[in-house]
Amino acid sequence: MKREEVYTLIVGLLGIFVGLGLARFAYTVILEPMKEGLNLSYTEMGAIASANFLGYVLFSPFVGYLASRLGSKIVVVSTLFLVTVTLFLTSFSTGFFDASIYRFLTGVGSAGVNVGLVGLAAKWFEIERRGFALGVINAGSSVGIIFAGITLPLVILSYDWRAGWVFLALISLFVTVLSLKLKETPAEFVPETKIEVGDVYRSRSLLTLGFSYVFFGLSYIVFVTFYTSHLIKIGVEYEIASGMWSLVGILSIISAILWGKISDAIGRKRALFSVYTIMGVAFILFGLSTNLPMAVLATILAGASMLAIPPLVQAYCGDLAGKSSASAAIGFVTLFFGVGQMIGPSVAGFLADVTGSFRIPLILAGTFALVGSVTVRKT
Image 1 (cartoon, rainbow, N blue to C red):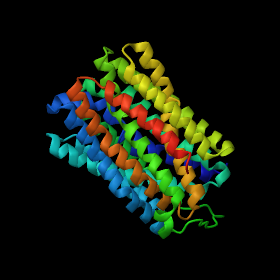
Image 2: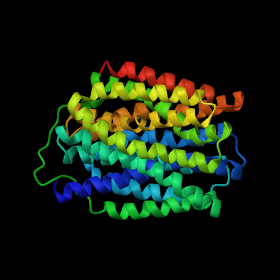
Image 3: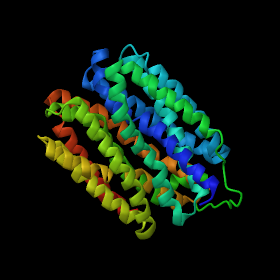
Image 4: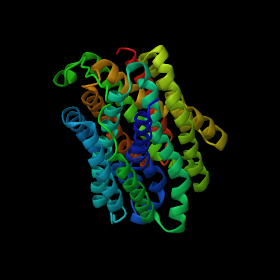
């Protein structure tokens, strides 16, 4: 592998580490102390998470279009900077309203980082290596889960939840600087267009793929948002729950790369069907968990499947649309994903407040994941 390809993979991984791993998933670890500090309900905390996803869903198609027209690098650098600023601003939250605004803007930045980096990878890696490359880059979100689960409790317990957001912003700034040296395309790049940018939104295959992605967004976000909270409710200590969240990240690093490699061999559709099914079983089992051993088993299954889905979908987009239209295709299907993850936390938070537990929201999340497995077979 060439040096420039290695640098693209490393910075791509770090970009997703910040744009998704920290900007989105660290909220799971900060949720409980932030909820107590701002005196908010689970419904409100779920709505704040939904604001983040609203920013993500509204701007994913737009940044995908910009990346296809103006270039992926400029989108990546500018939105990484936006994430840095908004993570810092979140530390100054005084209540539901301003926290929601900051998380919305962070979601906008996350959309640009994710779509831009995936589009960049599609240009740098051919179809026979694309699943593996995107698995490596998307492992950044898993690294973020591990990192957040280990470091944030130390920061929060030593200082407070506000210091946690400042800590994340400083890391984001460092990665933003590294992204300045990314290159748009390799020297031998040959444009490839299977679907024109303007036709991406009318492709039957991409529409079906996007529809299946709704169920991923709807299901996985309930699990990641309330993972720690559910464990605490069944009697697991905060420090142990945070450590188990790191286990999800460790397994997800392996699964994203492994499933990417498998999909290069057996095809994206078969791989996606398998991963959706495992994830659905994991979420249902987690919702039914009443003790630590059951929760650990569900956590292992979730880690072995959940975060392998985004790189598989992204690689599938590149396969269907071609290198030149990949960013637009990814932005388009991410719109569907965002709709699901925008709805999930608010509904789950409401059900948790009404029922007093996360059992029903998690079982529903697993059921929706199984629906996604059926839908993806029709692509």
